[in-house]
Image (cartoon, rainbow, N blue to C red; front, side, top):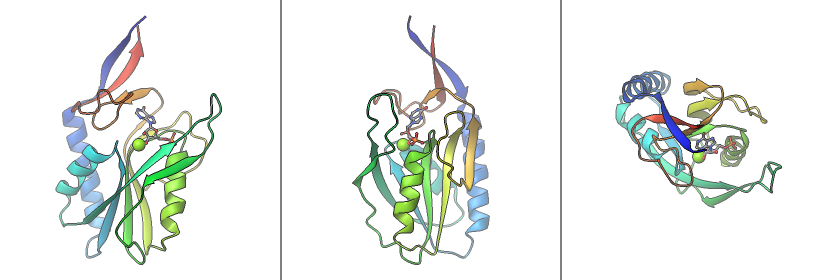
Length: 174
Ligand code: IMP
Ligand code: MG
């Protein structure tokens, strides 16, 4: 039995949705002073497209997070391996993430960034994968809802493979 990739979201669909999100964010943050915090590594491609589609310049920063699941039980333990560097106090902050699954990563990051006392904190997540959610996280901007499956491409990897593909694929066993 091998694993196959099936294209789930095309380049054109991605481009349309990024433009749509940029328009919404552009409207919502007009006249404000936005800092976008991207979650490495997965969000780097989405964030690069998103910031260039916005009608105004923004500041960017990045965090890198690791989750350690102990065997079969999701541990809920998330560690920061690279923290934000810009001061976020009293700033309008938007988290940019590639995909949400259990919700542990974004729930942790949200609490962590709230401790910096930003003026506002919202979340933009490109893929909302719904089936396995364990923690409710408020998502303010979503690119695509999907039910389930392991996705690769457009920043998403499987053991560091397929991250740089320009489309999003779902991995399937044949
Ligand atoms: P969770 O919401 O805490 O389960 O973690 C989400 C993180 O798991 C994302 O930031 C990804 O790094 C990774 N992840 C979850 N689902 C996928 C997937 O389908 N493809 C690639 N990475 C995924
Ligand atoms: Mg990620």
